[in-house]
Length: 306
Image 1 (cartoon, rainbow, N blue to C red):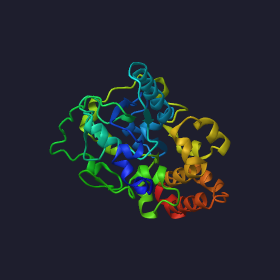
Image 2 (cartoon, rainbow, N blue to C red):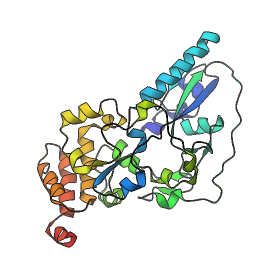
Image 3 (cartoon, one colour):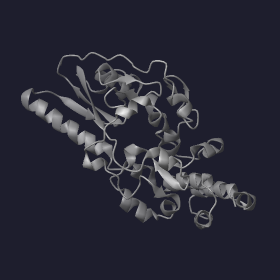
């Protein structure tokens, strides 16, 4: 994840990123929406699991718009120079939110709140006004380590330490090349992101449903059939996922991720046929993962599955 250190001290010194910055306004926005219960989807390997934050409209646009409106209202009362960020620059969002009193960093490295769990987005306004400073809250994880064993790939190597190279969110979203073979079976049916550490966290019992209509489930992505998604053409992918955070990984990596999930799914004729259809895909990346999946469903494997 080169982008995390490419910008040097700009990540830790806001005034280096936006000259004149005196304060950072940190905000959170809940995204937990209605839809199929996550653990139920994860328990059905023929279905596709998509991280709950990505089931609706792209949060970057939604939250950025809200923050810009807030910044405009501040400017109307108090002239200033500001800049809004939502995952769009080298900003240490969790550290800033923690300092702002929005929550504490959990052992899975995400921000936690007693009132809202961790199912929320973070965004910031860098501003050149010396606003009052909020007081950080104390952590409330205690002796709980539920998130550590919940990680399917063991990416949470110690409390507060995540090895991104093993994280399913990194492997299915940020990684542009091949997914390491040793990790593919551990990914299960997760085709875009992973929520297991959050789902295991007791504080998410208090996470409330978001009233934001833009975060409502689109195109049945909360429990879609793996085969159906794998058969989408690039045109269908672009049409149905336009405005979704999933759109940015592109059709090729979408197919790569689905091929892995199909390789982990129980054998059925529809799975085999769908994989065969893509076995000569123009993309070398797709072909590699399809052939791996077919190897998982060879004649011996089918016989054992019957």
